[in-house]
Every structure is written in structure tokens, then in C-alpha cells.
Image 1 (cartoon, chains in turn red, cyan):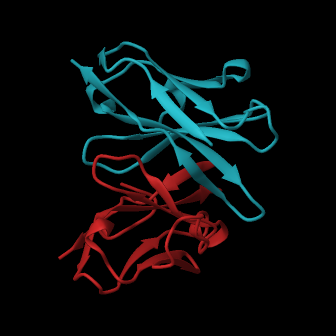
Image 2 (tube, helix red, strand yellow; image 1 turned 90 degrees about the vertical axis):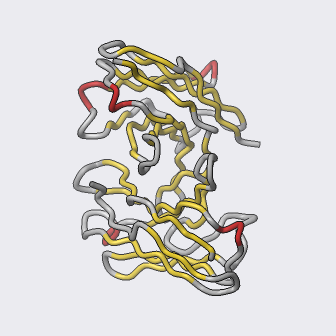
Length: 110
Length: 122
């Protein structure tokens, strides 16, 4: 069982918007920055969002991140079939002195 | 251009020791602030962080696997090595190495290797 909790799956139609939640505690999300990773089928994870809401170069602004208290959210607008992937949140856990990931969320674009 | 690539055996037997090598380019682990982590992913399951080594040779391990893991670096070869003892079929997974960076705010993994699948037979 993962330290960070994500919904197993979300879905929406092309062009629509979807959000993926990531819930933690004061020892991880509450006091550390969150990053998000996209894993397309059969590939390695790729950095999507860092420092809660920053996008690396090359990541479209359709992807956004936010954090409030002990939860973080990834938003994806203008959904495309190419966005179908697994999405993971991650952060440092100060109590465990370890990096922790969420259980992952499978995004399906209907 | 930063790249990382994992290498090691595709198949190991139960109780054996696994040795994986991460060979990277585009940065140096002797540079202050640089870190490399190992992360694994069992088939169809979530990512699991295993270990981290820093530029100053500081090391951190997953609490649950701490007794079985050793991470080391060879700065001259641009390599990071992970050993995992007493392998079990539940350790079957794709193993990734990734560069961890820390800016003025938080930590994150900005570059990942392609991963290497390790199967443990009983």
C-alpha cells in the first residue's frame, strides 16, 4: 500500500478536462514539494510537473499542478488520446527519510 | 544532453544477489547537488523508490529493503551500482535509475533511464 493515495483510474472524453488527486500527510505532501510523472505504455516515467506547479521545458500548458495542505492535484485540459498513460505523484517523506510515490492513476481518454 | 542506462542480468535465481549498473552521461556525480536514485516497478504495479546516492557519497535506502541494498558510485566511470541480496520472485520488476535534482524548492527526478526488467525464478 502506497504512502500517497491516488484514485486507480480516471476517464474523460477527448477535449475535456480531468483532475487526478494525490493525498498524503504532514510528513510528506504537507511539508514538501510534489512532482508528477507520466508513464506512457511500455515506457519509462517522464517528469511532468515539479515543485508543485512548475512544468519542465517541452511540457504543454495543458498540464498543471497544485497543492493545498496535504493534498496535490494534477490537471489535464484539452484531453488527447496521446495522454492515455499512468500518472504518479511523488514527494519526500521527512519521517521516513525516503522518497514516496502514489499508487498511480490510469487515465483513459474515451 | 543527460542520459542514463541500466544494465544487468535479465534473470536471477532465488537467494542470489542482483547487481545492476546505471551508466550515465551529461552530468557528473562529483558535482555538488547531484544525486542518482534507483526505483523499481513490478509488472502492472506502482513505482517504488529503493535508494539514493549523493555527490558527497551520502546514501539513503528504503526502510523496508535497507538490509538487502547497497548503493555505490564510480565517479570516474560515471556509474552507480545497486546490489540487492537474497532475491525472491516478488522482486521481479523493471529497475530504473533516475537523476534526482534539488532546486531552491524541492526534489524531483528529471531524467530516467529506460529501465531493465529483472525476473527472479524460484
